Length: 339
Image (cartoon, rainbow, N blue to C red; front, side, top):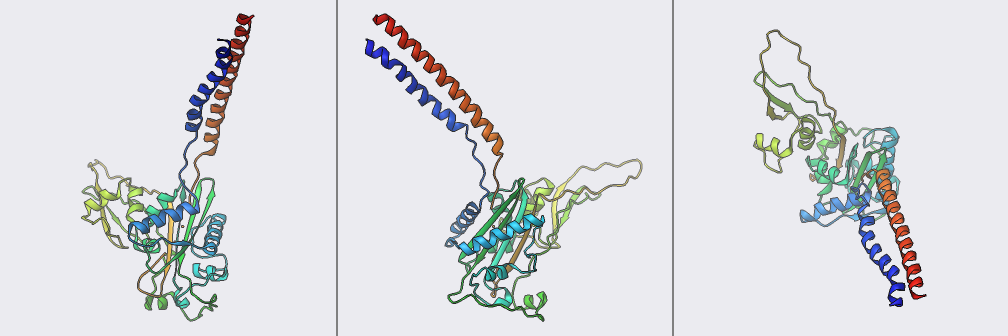
C-alpha cells in the first residue's frame, strides 16, 4: 500500500504531461508560406499538374533572384531593370550562369516579379496564372532550371522568379548591339517586355447602370476582379469566357449592373479610384515563338504567436507547480500514515 502511495504523485505527473502536450502544440499558429523554396515548390506543383517536369533549382539563379528582390525592396519599385540598366538574362550572365540561346533576343531566360502587402506564395502563383507571359514562365517546355528570391519589408513582400536553360559550354560574353531596339527585337520573334503595368482603375457606371472595364497593358482577370470586388468566375460567366481564356489590352469586360436613380438636379459624378493590391511585372525573352518567365513569401504575425506560446507555457508551469505541491502533500500524508 505504501509503495502505491509513493508512486501516486509520479503517475499523476505523467498523466498531466500527456494532457498538456496537445495544449502546447495547439498554441503554435501555422504561418502561410512566403519563402523562396516554397515558391519554387508551388511552381513545380503547377508544372506537374500540367504534365511538365519540375524545374531544377540552380544555386546561381537563386542568388540572382534574391539579389533582385532585395534591390526592388531597397528602391521600393517593381522592375526588371537593375540600377545599371541590366536586364534579367544579363544579371545571370554577370553572375556566371551560362544562359543558352540567342543572346541578342535575351536567350532562353524568363523572369516573373510581383509585390504586394501580405502576399503569400500561393497568391503570387495565382496572380501569375492570370496572363499568358507570366504563365509561360512557369509552364515553359524550353526552360529547365529556376531560382527564386523573396524580400519582406514590414509585410510588403517582393517576389522574383528566374527560369532559364543553361548552355553546355562556358558562360557566353554578351555585348549589346547599340543599333538594336526593342521594336527590332520584337520583329524577330521575341516577346515584348511588360515593363509598364497599368493599375486597374474602376469605371463609372453608364446611364443604364452597366459597369464596363477596358483592359489596359499588363492587367489580368484576377487583378481586375480584385479591384472591383468580384470574382474571376463571375467575370468569365458574364462575358462568356472559357476557364483558360485570357484578356488583352483594349478588350471591354462587363463587370456588373448597378441601380441608377434620376436626380432632380445634375450632379458631378466622381470616378472612384481604387489602387491595386499588388504590383506585377513580367519579362519574357525566348529565341522561339514560345515565351517563358519567373518568383518568395511572407510570415504571419510572429509577436502574436509568441504571446500565445508564452501564455501557454505559464499555464503549464502553474499546473506543474500545483501538481508537485499535491504530490508532496500526498507523500507527507502517506509517511504519517505509515508512522
